[in-house]
Length: 115
Image 1: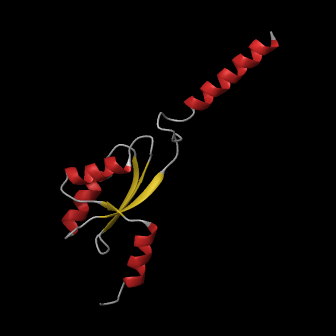
Image 2: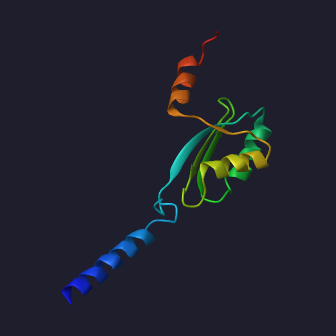
Image 3: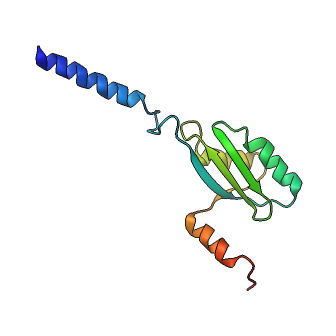
C-alpha cells in the first residue's frame, strides 16, 4: 500500500512539474531580450517598427534606435520565438539580424572610428 501511495505521489509531482513549464520547456513568466540589427533610414521606419513589432504576440518591451539601427525586443519565449520576431520584421519589410555579444563589442569598439 505504501508503494502505491509513493508511486501516485511521484506521478503527481512529475505531472505538476511538467505543467509548470510550457510545452517548449520555457517557464511561463520568463522573458528574453534580443538585440536586432535592422536597416532603418528615417524616423518613419523607426515608427513603423515600433508600431508593428510592439504588438507581436509576447512582446513586452521594444526600443528602436535609429542612429545605431538596432531594435531591442523583450518578449515572453512561451508566446513567441526569435524566428517569429524575424518573420514579423520581414512581414513589414525589414530584414532583422540578431546581434550577438561579440557583435555588440565590435560595434562599441568601432564607434567614432573611420577606416
